[in-house]
Length: 490
Image (cartoon, rainbow, N blue to C red; front, side, top):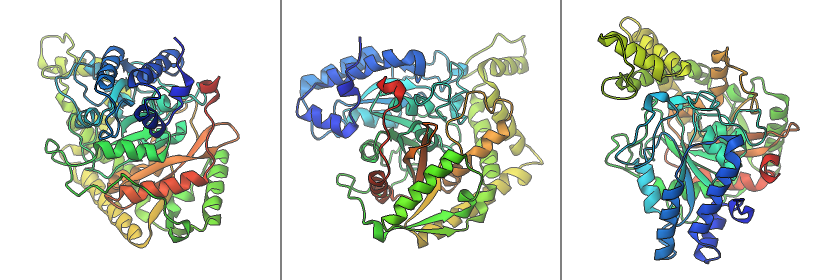
């Protein structure tokens, strides 16, 4: 059955208004998005698990009770990355290691989404255990970019971003450890928010780098990201890293006056080598901002030069610790082995984990090993502290930091298969913010002549998501609104 484009093209805010006016029911909206998934999945492959029966039943139950204005996401379909535990649905984290795993409880984000009235329609694809920047490293299949099906959607939340662009859902949740929300949002032409570390509960999320992981929303507009974020943010006693800093009132957001804003532009992020089309779009965006009266000033953040090395030591070390539980005995896939414990470990992990996950586990284990901890992990932690202090200094002088998201647009599949270090270097625009722990918002800045989206990101002070979103709304109104991908409208 063909989906209704009048419903699947709606933003979250538009869909909520239609539901409250009873222009259509939640069941009709949810069914339209599920039909859209059926139409597009053979080409996009953004979803690992489609929860059709449960989603339709949940929507029917909501319709039976009637619209509830007290629930900000009442009746709205939302997808979640397949690292969020959902009761009664598989959770694989994109890995064969967790094939067949059915959790008996739900992630804190999922619980709050349901409490806000949202309907979970699908679980989206990702790089295995969120380790990657292209969604090529999913153990099951790669996700394709709706703007060009021969290109990657970014990662690791590539399924979430591609699903937004393909009109499979008006809102989605992913996780951002080193840019895994902001980068796929940029490559797929949608909006993505990485909240401050600790602002959104990590309870019930399959861990990658525990001191870096943070859940956040993706959507078509900045306002929609604010709706999703406001529904799930806040302290959770089940997450020891959850912050109790009071959440700002997001019920009414107003874009600031352009002439009152000062943005810092770190030279270390802006003076590198960019793809020609990316450079053109970003230069145009900066000119638009300056012509509106926004002040843009170059600054130096020298520690950023060491952020890639520090990040991949810290993230890999934490990954090696987190994934040690998948030993073929207590958790995860269990290979037959040859009778001894060592072969059981080796064969279970070889069979259950892909090459990128194994690479990062080995790197992290080495960095934490006796004799190397001080040389690698301790130094990486010291660099992290320097980066945190530089962010605090710059954001004490400026309202926000403006930065690119990626130096290149979505690249062809297989471009970096034999050169992972080059692909790691592409994360230099996003991962410093994860090391600093602050919030960041990626939004579309325009299309290149190649027809591929280019994103730009705003980074702000800790726990100041509201002014960050408000500034994003201002920039969104200045930048050109992207058309739907030809794949979507064709």
